[in-house]
Amino acid sequence: MNHPLTPETSEVPLAPGMRLPRSERRQLSPEAVAEIRAIAGCYPDKLAATLPALYIAQREFGFLSLAAMKEVAKALEVPEGHVFGVATFYTMFRKQPAGRFHLQVCTNLCCALNGARDLLAKVAAKTGAVPGEGPTADGMWSLEEVECLASCGSAPCLQVNEAVYDEFVDEARLEAILDACRRGEYLAWGERA
Amino acid sequence: MTRIRTKPDPQRYTFDGFGTSKYPNFMLRGAGDMDNWTLSAYQEKWEGYRALRKALAMEPAAVTGEVKLSDLRGRGGAGFRAGMKWGFMPKDTPERKLIRYLVCNGDEGEPGTFKDRAILEYNPHQLIEGMIIAGWAMQCAKGFIYLRGEFGWLVDKLDAALQQARDAGYLGRDILGSGWDFDLLTYRGAGAYICGEETALLNSLEGRRGEPRVKPPFPAQAGAFGRPTTVNNVETLAAVPVILRIGGTQYAGIGTPGNSGTRVYSLSGHVKRPGLYELPLGLPLDFIMNDLAGGSSTGRRIKAVIPGGSSAPMFDPRDFDCPMDFDTVKARGSMAGSGGIILMDEATCMVEVALRLTRFYAHESCGQCTPCREGCNWMEMILHRIEHGQGRPGDLELLSSLLPRINLRCLCPLGDAACGPVESALVKFRSEFEHHLAQGCCLAG
Image 1 (cartoon, chains in turn blue, orange):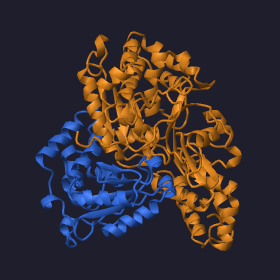
Image 2 (image 1 turned 135 degrees about the vertical axis):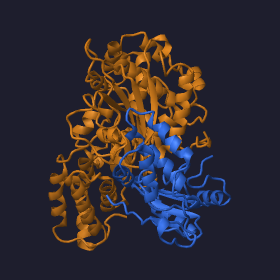
Image 3 (image 1 turned 90 degrees about the horizontal axis):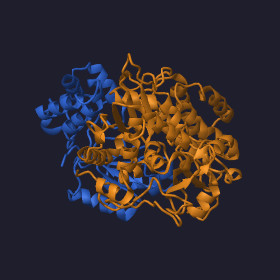
Image 4 (image 1 turned 180 degrees about the vertical axis):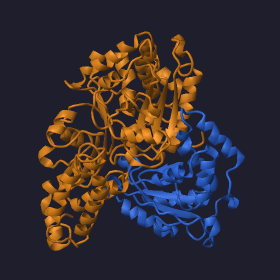
């Protein structure tokens, strides 16, 4: 288990272009708190709403900063340590900012057998993003190597943010995906339709 | 709704003869058709929710009896008999009324497996119907569908499908006049492979870290939120309406005795026609990979096959004639697992394969129990130096000595799963490891 946690970004200077969670927000919006409380009511135990609440906070803040985790604990009225423990356990809860388009390439066995390494290198070269690091200087891209995306039969695959998902990605397909991102055809990270 | 994918899916779902009585199509009905997921399509094209009406007219125990007759085995990996599992659920007594839960395991994370995704994408109502029938059989109060975090867009689709079922009266209060209330909720994980293990999944569903629990108590005694719970795989639950429709005895007649019905195999790796193949259990591996899927995609000979998802020990060509059912694959030293068949041609370096899979398990180990947490990292470290030409004399013996210290000594099967591919690669392709140690480079390719 290795989940590095970046320092609280709101209190340290950000690199140029690093995307701050929307308008340096330090608090969850009242709508988000209401949404979290509504979800908590659906389960026999409000603790069950921890994961959905963290997703909501991630959407609002852009990533899970310490402030975001504290807000979730406050909204759910559960110990901060619990929320912190859960947020650091799961890889899809980001502990550092993402670019407008967070690109995820699976490099597990089936994708690796079909050229995922090349794809990852190509994505890195075309966008300038470094796998596992924060966003590029213009805040446009971030890149991550991920484990199986359940697309083994149509490998290699590439996921953009949470919604768009592409299979059999060759050079032409990759260029088309990146162009669609540049034209703003896909939802940006954390954006909701 | 916006996240629901509308563009055509490039996956392959069919083959010549699929859908005939020889190769019945139970799971992949309408797969590839982007409009197949709606309630109206399910009812008009696939006799949807008729099995539910039939089940609700039966006694709950009789429904479980029908599933026992079908001899349906869990499609998630362990192959445990579903009817028997349902039978473990405690019943109400005159003095005590229990709250029971049903949980669907949709945390499909096993590398090489992508069958549940297709069922969720194209036939969500078949799963929903199966869950309502299972809920009736065990008299559950509520059901949860746990999906892996990467399936965000499928959660939206499933939520939409659940709302359609609710509007039609299949979910909610007094379902079809039976006097029984039942509802389903989706729950999205957040990227942890370990949550495919049932007790880890229950912890995750409760909003905790996905760490497996010590058994006993088993989920049927104290599962989700401390209540009796049954956890079944997506494909297992989606088979339930089929069993009710055609009858348990008829279903048991498909496949081989003790390994009944069809299952969806996921073919990937160096294979000419990758994709999903729904087949009766017990067909030989070489028939599936060569006759149906077209054999190697690279023109090179296939050297190794993983028969049941990345956790299953590899087969070399001597075992390619193995009939694909739970018992025979186990007898041949591997496991049928999740049905993910991964082909590797002779240019593939087995050291690299072992390293890649071990890296996955080391990363996904929950860190709770020592043999897995420490052992997987050690295995990764040793394999890493062998792969990169820095292996030391005695490394192979060190690696072999680690395996029995992890295998069967962990809280959950993740540690065992990490050992399977490494051990089989070490035994069956030892020369490649030795070449790496001696020459510092690959023997293959």
